[in-house]
Length: 286
Figure (cartoon, rainbow, N blue to C red):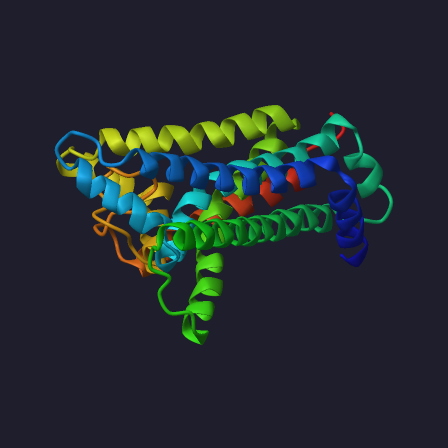
C-alpha cells in the first residue's frame, strides 16, 4: 500500500494536469466574482424583481455570505476539474500502458486503485479549499470596495468554514468516483471525463424537467445526486430567495441534510464496489 501511495504521489505532483486543474478552478472562481462585480455595477435591471435580484447579488458577494455563496459557486467549478483530474489520472494509465507494469512489480490491483481513489479525494479537498481562499480574498476586497457587510469573524465561523469545505468536497466525490469507474470500464481518459460530466449536466436538466411532475415521477430526483447534494450544501447556509433568479443560489426547500448525505454515501459505496470489482476481474492489458 505504501509503495502504491508513494508512486501515486510522485505522479500527481509531477504531472502538469494536476497544476492546470487546480489553477483552472481558482481562476474560474475569481473570474465569476469579477463578472458578479461587473453585473452589480450595472445596477438593477428594469424588470419585475430586478431590484431584488440586484440586492441578492450584492448579498452573495458580501464577505458575510462568502461561505454559503462561495461554496455554492465553487461546487460547480470544483466538480468539473476534479472529474477531469480523476478521469485523466486513471485513464492515462491505460493510454500509456503503465497499469500492467505497476501491477506486475509487487503492487496489487486493489492497492493501485486505492491510491487512485486517495489521490482523487485529496485533490478534490485541496481544490475546494484553494478555490475558497480565492473566494475569501475576492469577497473581502469587493466588500471593502462597496462597503458590504463583513459579519463576525470568530472561532465558530472558522470552524463552520472547515465544515463547509468538508461538506462541499463530499458532494463532489460521487462524480469523482464515477469518473474512476468509467475510466476503468473504457480504459481511456476522454470517454471517462465526457461521460461523467455528461451525466452531471444531464441530471440537472432532467431534474429541472421533473420539477413540475406529479406522482411517481416527482420522486425520482430525490434519489439522484443534485437534489441530495443541495440538501447537504444547505447546511452551509442560504442567501436570498434561492428561486433561480441569481446563479448558484440554493433553494431552502428540499430533503433534510441527513437523508441527502445517506443517499450520496450509498451511491458512492455502490460505485466504488463496481470500480474495484471491475478492476480486479478485467484483463488490464486487453
